Image 1 (cartoon, rainbow, N blue to C red):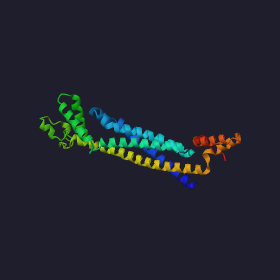
Image 2 (cartoon, helix red, strand yellow):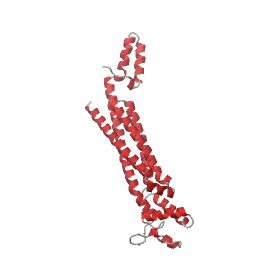
Image 3 (cartoon, one colour):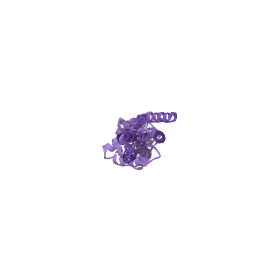
Image 4 (spheres, rainbow, N blue to C red):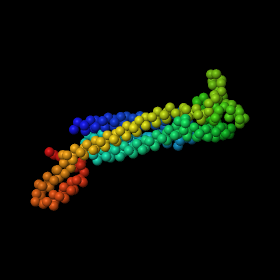
Amino acid sequence: MPKKIQIAYSLHTLNAISTVLAVVVMALCLWLRYEWDFKHYVYELEAQQVLWTGPYILIAASSLTMATSILGSWATVIEDFQLISLFALASAMSIVLGMAGLAYTLNHGIFHSDLTPWLEERFWVLFHEMDYNERSARILRIIQEDMECCGPSDWKDYQTFNKVLPDECRSPVTGNIAGGSCAEEFALWMEPRTGWLSGIALLLVVIQMGSIFISLWLRKLILLERSKDNRPYRLVVESAKTCDSKSNNSLKYVGVAALFAPVGFIQNKN
């Protein structure tokens, strides 16, 4: 059936694309988790739950996607409608996980999200602790120098609380004071990283939706073809006729049982 073959090839193609995108998503998540500078910021800011929960969920979703793609390709090759149904169900679970990770990452990883107010609150804690806590002073100086920012909201925070303006707030080239908020500058620094990750994860989700639709279409064609060929019970009925040609009751029971028998165990030898 040419139409069925074309749909099968389409499903193989989408599974291959899903696998590649899942690998990319996992690689980006692992990079966000283990990249040295970013990991240092996360630990010092105590932001593990805020900044790493989304990537963790996306790692789980991409792992499930890769396993699901292999299952879908195998089910398509052997034309097992039960495995195709399992593929569609697993893909739906992967989509739910992917959307959850995507939503959390966007809500805690870009400028206009919950990340900015959380960072501002955290920087205020560091700002007030810097006079007696060397660790808080160190991380605040590092971020102000790396992000070219000054203070939780702006450089006037030092003036308001009668604190000495640190050298990290000044440009090493011009000597001008950095005017940006550290919370906003850090969120803007995060946005390209989480933005690319979220965009690729969203594309993966869309492709998986297409895979589910095509797999269910292929499943319908396989069932239709088998119903026309009478595949599910022909072999069982013929075996029953050979073993007991005089027993109509046995033939009826075997025929009914064959309707519920797994398709993988019943093949048409004609």
